[in-house]
Image (cartoon, rainbow, N blue to C red):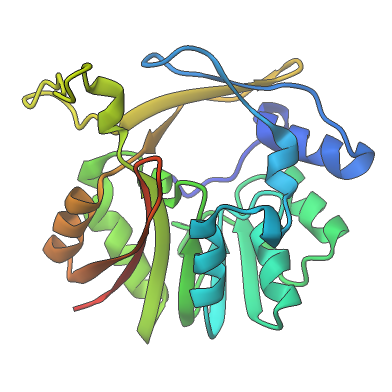
Length: 243
């Protein structure tokens, strides 16, 4: 796992967040993948209030307790909602532009640091990973390293709250039969590249994982996964705790 942070010159999402923070409007944040057609992230949705968030995210915020680490905090929308609820939260992101935006928006404790950087330490009661939080893992073979890092940062009775989605529906025919190469890579391993105005970021791996697979990898690495909520779009919220 990389421990670096982003170069602002190659940080399209951070620039979009910075523009929206300053001007209340942003251009198109385009998303490319070798697996899918071009897509777009509506930048305004990154700034939604709690009452505008999906039910899964609202449940995660309500369930988060103690000293909370918000990983990949982006615009800080989840952190700000937690602050407003009187909760103690530290926001981290690898985007210097996003970190500056969060500071401008009133996030009290925000740090420019990678989740896997050993300089990040603590004893967090809740680690929060939302907006497909499993994406940070990248590929399934990286789960052992990921869970080692979670173990280092969690308090003894701590919890990891993570949402994700099962992409199986993308491979199903009209009869609901999935056409997947079981000998190939896991179908939820996706590569992405983002572009905003004239800024193009590096291609990165992003993991969408079904709950049963997440539960398997958790058990293999000393954790137990509990599904707290199931959405209508193959999405879910999971709580992971040490066994």
